[in-house]
Length: 548
Ligand SMILES: [Zn+2]
Image (tube, rainbow, N blue to C red):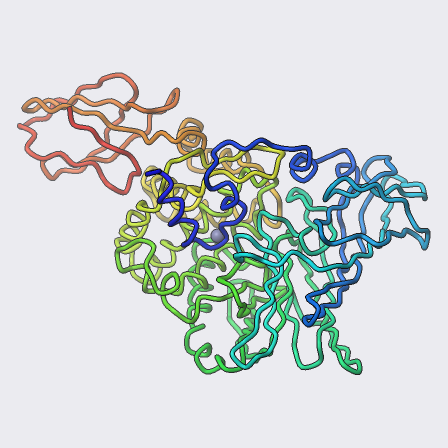
């Protein structure tokens, strides 16, 4: 039971911590056929490449009911007549059409196989309309156990939002629900009661008024992942500013409940501060065309692309608490900084398979310390990062199981971040490290990637073979242990608890003089000039030490 406590804390504390909560108490899960249909690139997915979605829905708060259609446009890569669309129960696909012909649908749980009538010529652009309706799953504990949050604001107005990381966008709309294929652009039309407003991703293109309702249409010009798409409905007030960024003028728009307008105008100053720090560390904000938005929601928050959602109650830290326990975590609003950090790591660079979700969470958790670094210096950043180690549980590897929609350990947050902090020490050149992070966002701009691509990129650009380093931290729960023995002026040392070929150098201090050690699995000897009176391992390295 001991090991479970940190899990529970993690579960309560971390945002964007999603499906993991479902397997909180089981390290091994028996995967089903549904997991494979959801998590793998099935033949019925592989033959077509998403180009465009038009999601067009009506939301009825009184009945907690949604209805509408998604127009799914795609390019034919291989010949095939059957395509897989995902939509989770209890929502129902009522009809699918192509070129005005109704199509046959075979249902297999949450996967739906649509047989096309017209020939699918390689290279052609095709489109299918999928109609659906129902009472979508209500979020039990958004954003971790997501779906639709049907809430009210303090004035009794409906306050509604979607969240679906891990669970999948197919919990509320029909789509190709796999991370590997991002749609190139997307139109989102949401019909809501007239007195409310919908805020989705990208830019507001039009508002159409009807007798009792309004339809808000938003356009996303850039590739977007499924879980990034969102609907937020409320009695919103709006304010904005223009940020002079690395790629020119960036629109930053804020949508908050009317009663919170004055509070937000002060509190959201962290948003342009974030933009300045992250453009410095990671390069230009990746979605200038779509602008940046911060949107108040009735749950904690999520990294919805160009529509970052916010529910931290205008507090510093994480709902007023500091995840690092050092005090530094109260210097910023955790939700604004963390969720916005995902614009670079999750929305710009996106994992192909959620087993590699460390690419989203490790870099973003690490971005919290880089925000501190920018405004409070390197020492503050280090203290914060080291402080977050109390959230690490080392219960199972950071990388999950592939092809079954399975996330790895919640350690993808702070163990992953501390791994990156350790890597910064190995590179020992902060400007080079910054260029690596900026270059990474350029190299994988608007792409979905595998862990191998990221690991290779970091090895190549650091000039260090990091194969064993990543195997150690991402694929095992072992923490490298530096064993050492001091005998007068002689130091003996070696690594234990390591994977094959792990030979990470480490910085130590002997008699107040800093130096590097180059341990491996064999005992090595260092003959110091004088008696060794003090010995200390640099605690920026995420390792254990053991004096024999
Ligand atoms: Zn996150």
